[in-house]
Length: 459
Image (tube, rainbow, N blue to C red; front, side, top):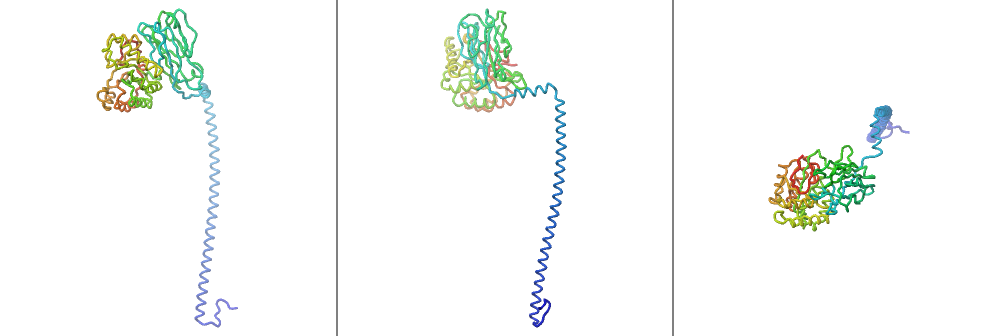
């Protein structure tokens, strides 16, 4: 056997070749050895890293368990301290909230009518409107119901009257008569209340016109008016409002401590401007009063109904836009009564306010208004929108002069007025004004009586 370093019987050239081959084999062997040792080093390092990671993870897990246990003890101690410090009245309040949680409910309103001695039953009046006898007249009976009662919520409105000579009569409900429609005796006082689940979520407010002045608001079964002293009831207002969670509720859901103004629109409805104005009011939680021309009402019954549904006030601007100064009293009366009936036919409620066309009045004409139970509403800010037809001018006319208690005159016939309203309604709201109807504004500023004129209601 020939060993690797033996060179027996070979030439020098062959020996050189063999030497080269041996050198190549040694190089390959060294490379294999280097790779093996490198792999061994990597494996060792990996094993060390794994061991270190395992130790670290175990240590962190133990630390967290310890912290959680400590935190849990602290939470239990805090809960125990809180329970020990809870005052009895706070505990009762929390229990009450669990038993009767506050829930959002929809707006709801009253609808009511009056029987006037010698004239008969009125149409229904809208929530917080003025149901008044004509000058010299008085009320002998009332009836009431609810508008937009929430589906599935139990209860109704009940009402009771004190009839002169008879005292307090039985409670009535669901538009039944309370009083003496067939007799001559006047009402002296009124009580109202809600029943069932309605009483848990709503308040009913009411006031009466007695001795030429409106009484303070009574609510939920309190007596409005003075019985047994020879005074009669000449008018009534009724309003249903949602109860508030942590503050008082008010008739019309109007806060009397905050500034308010009445936006009013004449000569409509119109197919373009009126819907835009209603949309802006709805988007900003506002209401307005629309003094409508009677001959336009029948063509826009959907808009009249929308006004009523949004809580806006429907009002009277004569049937043919007739000036009080240009017609005799009989024709003026016909114009007003035709418009009242047209609005009632379309919207379900009757107007209680009129606006003299052009603001022109006469003593005879105001006598007619008083004879059909209507005050006359003028204005404190005239935008002249009918003349300029310029939205910027209308906006400036309002924003540069508006004050608490103003009645603002515009016309819902013009696109420029709708453009101005799109700006005015949110801006006035941002400035802190409540946008209310004329009747709502008056109800917290002294009230109104038939046959009288009003152009603002300052606090």
